[in-house]
Length: 187
Image (cartoon, rainbow, N blue to C red; front, side, top):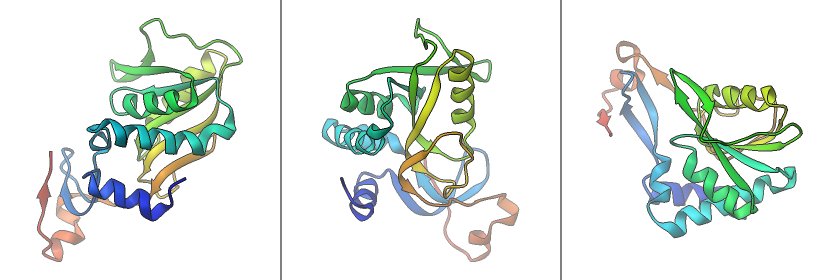
């Protein structure tokens, strides 16, 4: 298992994690930029990340991995592969996550939810509702980055590779703007 310093260095070196003063599409400003897709540009890094998260979640003995498209699919795939489990994923339709493409959750299935990043926990709640409605149970939730600082309520253990508290501010109340920190507009 990699220690926290090595994981953070890997995330920073791949451009997946940056600290500073950033503009979000919502118009709000934040002190962290997270782009987990960068970890999957190179096969070896994606595989390493998947193995690392799988190793931390294996003791929960899931039957299946469930992710949310789009951001959770690659980490979910690599975790499922490392655990030798099937991957199912949910997709947004009319603003809500749904299970489609013939994927099935049968009663009694133990599910490991895998996300790229967690902020508010909305997709975790939606996936948990889907699993519960189909008779399965969520045994754990793995994520690459928990931006809530551990404050997201969840019914199962939340296991992140990296955890910190990201702050978000309306443009007119941003303390970083008041300090004169340059604003970075990232895509």
